[in-house]
Length: 123
Image (tube, rainbow, N blue to C red; front, side, top):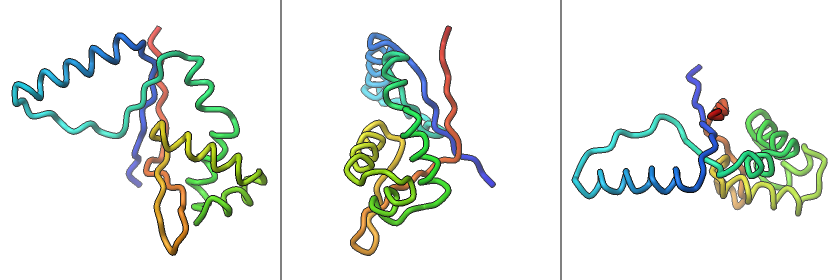
């Protein structure tokens, strides 16, 4: 089985802006950029990472990956949580890039396109 990974790291805002500026300069020069293997998501602090990856949200990621619910309602049933709270968590996880939503049969299903999360913290 091929493992797809999402890399999560912590960078301060200055580092993120510098990385973005460097990429923009390379694009302006006409350089070809290599595709990034897997997704990379950066938070500006450990505290913001901790708020994003709560135990309940990590549980949702696991349920989505293993049970493949066909809708937010089904995900709420499996997780035994309120649909409104599940919908808010799914929306947030989509905003930070950890899940996608796929519409099938007039339902919106949360989808995960990776197998592992690699957490990298610089010391």
